[in-house]
Length: 318
Image (cartoon, rainbow, N blue to C red; front, side):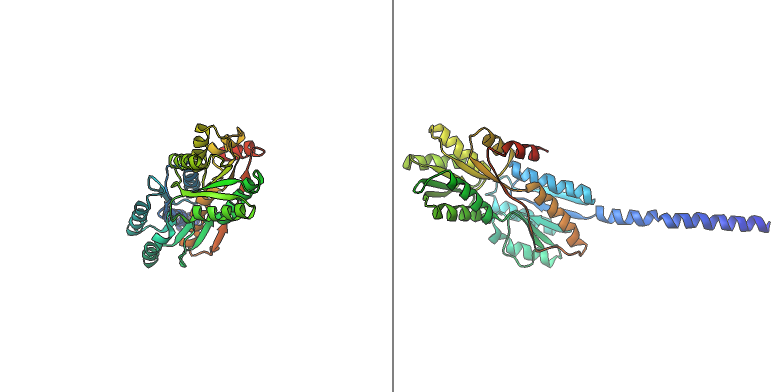
C-alpha cells in the first residue's frame, strides 16, 4: 500500500509540475489583457481613399498586436467640430490610447488636456499639433512634401508663368504647410502666383476654384493642389475649358496615380498613409505599456511621375 501511495503522490506531483510549467493561465492573462486594450483612432474623415488606407494600416496593427482598434472620422475634413466631439466621446468612454489626425490643430489642444487628465496617451498622425504632451507625431514633413511638389511643377514651367495654388480647409495645418512649401519654391523659381484659394480638400470645390481662376487668367500655366482630390478637381475644370496645363497634387493615391500614368496629371507627392495608421497603433501599444516612443517618427515621401507611376500603382494596390 505504501508503494502505491508513493506512486500516486509522485504522479500527482508530476502532473502538477507539467501544468505549472506550461502555465496556460499566465499566457491567457497576457493575451487577454492586450485584447482588452482599446485604441481609438480619430481621422479627419473616412470618405477619402487616403484615409481608408490609414484606416487599413491601423486595423492591421490591431490584429497584429492583439488590441481592439476602432477607426472613426467625420463625413468631411471641414467638419472640425464633429471631429472634436468624437475625440471628447472617446475620452469619456475611457479608451486606453488616442491616435488622432487633427483637422484643425489649434482647436484640439484643450481637448487633449482632458485626455492627459484621464491618463490617456495621445499620438498624432499625418498632421501635427502644437501640444507639448503628445506621445509622438508620426507622418510626413508636409512643408518638405510641398517643396518637392513645387519643385517638380517649376521644372515644367518657365520664369514668369502664372500658377494657382489650391489650399485645403482653412486652419488645416498639413495642407497649409504643403502650400507654404510649394509657394516658396515656385516664387523662388520666378513663377507668378495669381491665385491661392481654399477648396476644403474637395474635388468639386477645387473644380470651381480653378474654373474661376481660368476666367480671370486664361493664360494660367500650372496648378499645385494640396491633395490629390483637389488636383483631380482642378483637372476636371481645365478639361472643361480645353486647357492643357501641368497639375501637381499630393498623396500619391490610386486614382491620381492612374491619371499620372495616362499623362493627365503631371505628378503627385506620395505619402505613406498605411504606415501612418499602422505605426500609430503600434506606438500606442508601446505608450500604454510604458515603453519608450520617439517624439518624431517620419514617414517617407516620393514624387510620382509618369516614369514611375506604374511601379507606384502596383505598390499601393498590394
